[in-house]
Image (cartoon, rainbow, N blue to C red; front, top):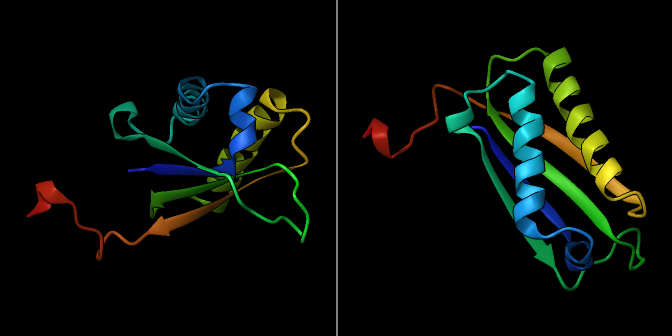
Length: 114
């Protein structure tokens, strides 16, 4: 926890490779000091086929899932930091966004909890 899953058009990988993108998202998440570095997970799902507003425009969307307990301000700052970094990295991608969802502590389970 937390999980940062980035859906994107496959073509953005021509600008930066996956390892670099993963590292940059990790560094931004780490810099917020909201999470322990050992808990941050980042993944990329590139898509060959997609539609954005019924057009074929490049896109990046990050879905962040974090444990409940952060303030709305902290979550907004996290989204803004990640999106700002991605806009800096991909100035020609017209659609870059992120949302943050909370895991409920009461219903969360992982392998180490069994």
